[in-house]
Amino acid sequence: MNTITNFWNYFQQNNFVFLLLNEIPKGELKTHFDKLIEMLHQYNQDLDIIIKNKTKGGELIITANGNPYLFKEVELLVHHAPVVERWKITAFLQPETNLIKYENGTDKPLDYYGITLRISEMYFIPLENPNRPTDLGIKVLLKNYIVYENNPRLREAVYVHIEHLIGEKAFANDLFFIEIDQLKNEDLEDNCVLELYNLKFFIDSIEYD
Image (cartoon, rainbow, N blue to C red; front, side):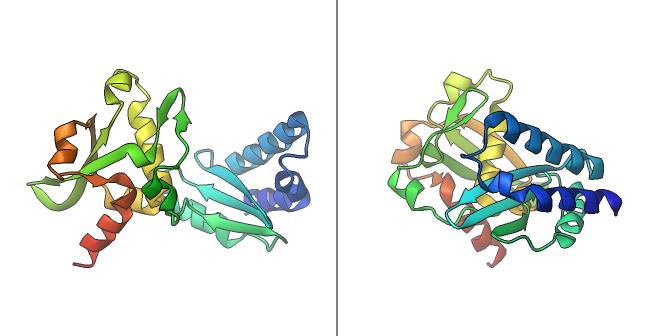
């Protein structure tokens, strides 16, 4: 419990630094962020944090990076979180709820180690495993797959995008295998593909069938 208490005490005492990200010198900000990560890793070295600044406050997300074996560790840490004014403390990446930018194609490209992908330009085809018919898999189709197919980080980049889109728990619990391939014109013409931004809706519709 000491490592949990130490983490939250540090965050509580220095929360204003993370709230004012754009107003704090980068060097000072990095020092505080590195210290917060260090204290988190004293509790569990495989957890991570994401900080989102919003108009009226901030959100601190504790993430297991999609590892279901660490979910209980995340839940325990967040369970002991103090109430910090102007902060929302969240366990796990949550599903993206604002899909309008993807529907309109106005979403910004996401860059991951030099791999640039836009969710509005990503599609998927549901896949089944004949030996385990309840295990859902998907084939993710990218417009620029041929550009990145030999990049060792491509799979990791796609995983990160899907995790942010459908939420950490759904990514870990509902998808059993993922393939990646090139999007072809005939795929769109045959209407055999679905927009990736509708993946969470698709998963939920299967669960409630």
